[in-house]
Structures are given as structure tokens and as C-alpha cells.
Image (cartoon, rainbow, N blue to C red):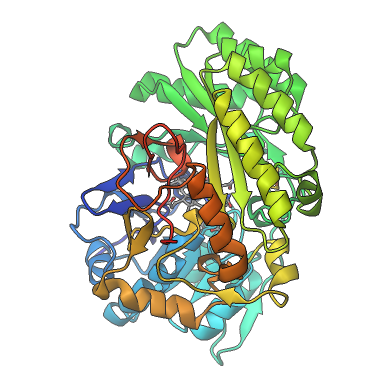
Length: 497
Ligand code: B12
Ligand code: SF4
């Protein structure tokens, strides 16, 4: 009998299936470990299980999740992003059938903005935790153990005995991030992981309409001190020999003074470490980038999104195409690797806008930047989805998904995905719930997405329908991608045609 107060299952994972190979990048499960530490510090016990470490030949069957969760505690928590939300919901049903007396909590970012829809359609989900877990988690366990009323715990969506749903008041964000203890690294064998992510901030204040990061964190950003960040790097370096760190937060470069201080203090530690980070083109400059490179930054990533000023304005990106070009041109002279991320497939992106983007991508590729285009993903948290869902048809294609929605079920093969018959039901489930899983759909596939994909293939940014060679990877936060020889810098299997 499991005496822990919570069995916590991490389902935030990167798993890409090719015909001949499986790509798994094991990342330290930060969100779950922050949550675990907070629950343990409150005096409870956590039985943490990381599904990234499962050794099933076929991880994406509900039976295997039930096996992985053998003998769970009375409360079972799932941590999930949007890509595995459909599968997690199916798996939760099977877990509930196997253990009807257990209380099932869904947490993580995947359910954000569709909590009520999930709770009303899937009665086996007992509760959804919304937002940061460090305060909600311990209070949830305490209340459940005491037989209290969850409607009194902020930050939840709960079902009462009569089946009615209650969204409890939103929980205030944790302002002082330094007050949060470091993740519960003692729960994992650090040597089994390859990706050491760090979060130096939480949330982004910018209003980009296609992005889910800012709304997930309610357009509010909080920051750790330079000393606190370096202390975590030091622990990981000294205890686990970590040499390469990835700042996962999109708002790492939040302010020049802070970044300069960080670089100076990091250099003073004398630690022999390297790191990668994201930056906005309008918040970086040459002096800052040189200081970053001197302090061990080997890769800077920019979200550029479009080469069209009209489109940049429409998606509220907050800088111009010219700013992007000049910043990347400077950055490639400073860092060994510079990534330029683009989004394409906006339903309001004219061919003229799109061609300007392709032109810029070609140009920046020629000067040495790595170009990483992603097909627009209609995440339910985004302003873009809300504003446009009734304006354009929502189409599903069984062979084409946005890169953001790779789940691990589908097989990436040349220019398309294949779905094996045993996994077909998960896509049927997705198709019957488009309002919960819009990320798997396209806005106007025929006139918007397919013609643009064809152009991107022509310029080598996606594979033609023939075998490519070599690999390229955007590092930690995207699937490994197979590049067409000499040309493509990013290849995620698309549809034929
Ligand atoms: C690190 C990270 C990853 C890591 C995850 C590492 C890990 N195992 O945890 C990796 C690299 C695996 C990853 C992969 C992907 N990611 Co990612 N990732 C992030 C990132 C940058 C930070 C996440 C994080 O650590 N946050 C910090 C912690 C503190 O927050 P948290 O994880 O949300 O956890 C807190 C709460 O949610 C809560 N909580 C979490 N779980 C639970 C469970 C319970 C029971 C409870 C009570 C509470 C609770 O408590 C935690 C502590 O406060 C975010 C962007 C961002 N800035 O937030 C994107 C993000 C989460 N990723 C995203 C996506 C889409 C992906 C991908 C699916 C697609 C992609 N191409 O990027 C891939 C995986 C699929 C694939 N094949 O490509 C989206 C999610 C969108 C959504 N609505 O779900 C985000 C928001 C980025 C974005 N651009 O929109 N990612
Ligand atoms: S795209 Fe980048 S800058 Fe814009 S809201 Fe998202 S994280 Fe912030």
C-alpha cells in the first residue's frame, strides 16, 4: 500500500517517433520538482514518477500508463502540456477505472483556458489545478487529508457532489521567486537527464497574440535575483557535473542592467560552464551580447516570427523586420550559434507577407543563423485563437500537425506523419473535441497552410518528399529534426504536396 500523500506523474515530455528511430530528450522535470519540494516542505510525502523514464516499447497506450502508476497514493496528480492532453485524459479514465477510490488532479499548462470544458466532459477528472503549484499543491493535499472543502482552496476548478463546477478565486502569483526553494533534485537521478533547464523568470509581459506563454502566466512576469540563479547553477555543476545549461524562459533577457550583472557575477565564480538563452531583438544590443558570450553563452535564440512589418504589427510583436535583421546580423558575429524562430500559417498572413518572411529567412540563413520555422499552433489560451475561431474554418489533417503538437503517437516519415491503427482512436478523440484541443487543427488548410508549406519546401525549410540526410536540432525545446542536405535548417514532417 502506497503511504505517500501524492503520486505525481510527469507527462511533460519530448518524444518523437521516426520510422527507424525514436528520439527522446530527457529534461529535468522542473515544474513537477518545484511542486514536489513545496509539498514536501509542507510536511507531506510525494511519490514522484517521471514518465520520461518509462521503458515501454510503446509508451502511448493507456494500459502502460496504468502499469506505470501501479499502487498509487490516494491522490494522483498528472502534469501535462497541450500536446499530450488528449492522451492524458484517456489515460486518466483508465486509471480511475482501475483505482476508483483515488482522487485525480490535472495540473500543468495543458488545461489552461479549457478547464471547465474538460471537467464537464470528462467526469473522471476530479479537479484541475490552475497556475503555479507551490502554494496550491500543499493546500490541496492538506484539505483532502483533512476531509475539507476544496471550494475554499484558491487556484482550482472542482466538482461538487451534485456535479456542479466551481472555479475558486485565482491564486495570487508568487512575487518573490527567490523565496521558492530549488526544485526537489533529490527525487531524481540527475545523471539520467540530458537537458538541464533553468527558469530565471516566470511569465512574459508582451502581448503577442499567437503565444501561449504570456497568457499562461497571465501577462505578468516575476524574476529571480542574479545570486539565486547562479546558486542553482553552482549546485547542479558541483553535485551533478552539469556543464551546459539552457535558460528555458523566453524572458531571460528582461533588462540590460540585470543581464550585465548576471554575466559579471557568473564570470567571477570561475565556474567552467556554458549556457543558452532566449532574447528579444529589441531588448538586446552588442554590448550585452558580448558580455553574454564572455560569460559562456554559446547560443542565443530570437523569436522573430515574420519578415513582414504589417504582420508583425498585427500579431503585436513589438519590433520591426529591420530591427530583427540588424540584431541577428550582429549576433552571428558574437555567438557560435544563433537561432531565429519563425511562425507561419497565420490565417490573415497574405502571400505578400509570407514571401517577405521567406525572403528574410533565406537572407538570415545565408549569414549563418539557424532558421526554425513553426507552423502556427492554435493554442486555446491565445488571443489569436479567440479572435479568429469563428472567422476561419478549423480543419483537421491526419498527416499534418503543427510542430508544437507532436505527441509521440504519430510516426514522422519524410514529408508527412503516419498514424498507426492502434493510435487512431486518440485522433478520433481529438477530432470530437476541437474546442479543447484546437492546437491540432489548422485555420483554412487548403488556402492558407498548404500553399505556404509548398513554398517553404521549395526553399528547403521543410523536406521535399524524398529522403533527407543529416540532423539538425534546435536543442532542448523542440524535436530533433532531419534536415534535407545542404538546404533545410528545420524539418518537421509535413503533409505531402
Ligand atoms: C521547460 C519546457 C519544456 C520542457 C519540459 C521539461 C519538463 N520535463 O518539465 C521540454 C523541453 C520537454 C518541453 C517540450 C515541449 N514543450 Co515546453 N515548455 C517549457 C517551458 C519553457 C518552461 C516550463 C517550465 O518549466 N515552467 C516552470 C514551471 C515552474 O512551471 P510549470 O511547468 O507550469 O509547473 C508549475 C504549474 O504548472 C504547476 N503544476 C505543474 N504540474 C502540476 C501538477 C499538479 C498535480 C499540480 C497540482 C500543479 C502542477 O506547478 C508547477 C510549479 O509552479 C514552457 C514555457 C514557459 N515559459 O513556461 C514551455 C511550454 C510549457 N511548452 C510548450 C510546448 C507546446 C512544448 C512542446 C509540446 C512543443 C514544442 N515544440 O515546444 C514540447 C514537447 C513536444 C515535442 N515533441 O516537441 C508550451 C505549452 C503550451 C500549452 N498550452 O500546453 C509552453 C507554454 C511554451 C509555449 N511556447 O507556448 N517544454
Ligand atoms: S512570443 Fe515571446 S515575447 Fe511574445 S508573448 Fe510570447 S514569450 Fe513573450
